[in-house]
Length: 461
Ligand code: FAD
Image (cartoon, rainbow, N blue to C red; front, side, top):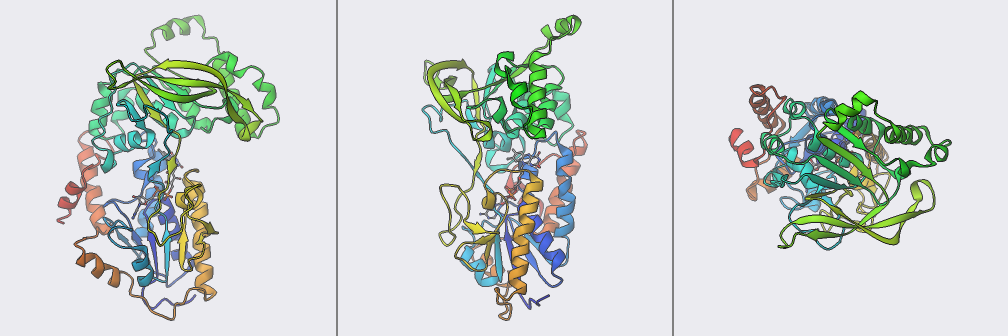
């Protein structure tokens, strides 16, 4: 191991990418110090603000991250927006290596007329709202209509459908925010369509999430058997996950409810279904022009096979009536700082094995490195790869550790001069304890504090 007299490594962003990068460096280098800078007072990125509240088991990774943060050689500085409060150049002056792991905080837009009508929301904002993301706490989505349309066939789309249709008693015991629970209690939504431009063989959601939706009590799947004609044959030689997923959709579409069950189902108030080969062209306004009343969709046919099949408009159109539209077509990373190269076309920082192209000492990991796809495990593996690149560069002399760097000593005084007061990990633990205590009374794992000012007050800032 190469000694790092002062300074060390800093990581920007405290989601899975930031924490897994830090963990791997600390584990494989006995002397490294890793400082994690985070924009929000609270850590863990999309594990806290993305993962659905009714999937608490997914959030267990927080225990591993907490273990890393408590290491003597790791420090957490929340409430510091890199690119605004401190520049990447200033971080590079203070540390031997800087790893950018700041995720994908924007969303892709459809770019069609009416996208800004009231009643149309991005999945990112809607998820942020029910998960207590401060910037979305005032979203107040209008849930007064009966039919919602989600554009997208991924797991985030299914998460949203499930939250909209779940029995309230399921959600009450989760860490969903109190105010979104209250809004869902008043919701009139009883039918949710999930529409995609391509067909059943191209859906991006996975079998566990689909099964959960099919088995959701009090709801009935509505799948059109005609959409699945001939698909059993087509997936015979497909990879096993795709084959099983398609077979489950076919089985669900063809299932003839037994008579008694059919009677019971007639009384089922809530429905959801998948619509395929439909490409949104325009959000249609109500006559007074104030809200969305539906979406005009172009019907498509597929050119090519499997994952690379392209949706081409047939020329036919269809209007789907709905009062709520949630566009779930993907997240998007933004450039952070003019000093950092950014590939706007792919929305990633150009890199080779996590080494940012043309900027020695600068690295990236997670969604900002790969693009906004992949689950926590995928993010873990790619963060370990980046960490490995940092370790190799430390050991191979690419990073000059003979020059000592001041690390937080330097950054802390810059931040002080700009009136920024970072939040430490033990500060976060106080916020955490307060949230857990507030949740206890209601039988929830926590009641999230959604106002950053309240968080800061709580820790005496
Ligand atoms: P993020 O988790 O987004 O972390 C980035 C962090 O950087 C954030 O904390 C952010 O505040 C911070 N940051 C941003 N800008 C700055 C700045 N300028 N300065 C300082 N800090 C900054 N995966 C699963 O395995 N299971 C699931 O159930 C699951 N559900 C998901 C549900 C949703 C809605 C979404 C969107 C994703 C889900 N994922 C799930 C995927 C998983 O969340 C991602 O793979 C993972 O979070 C990506 O990690 P990341 O660290 O790159 O980004």
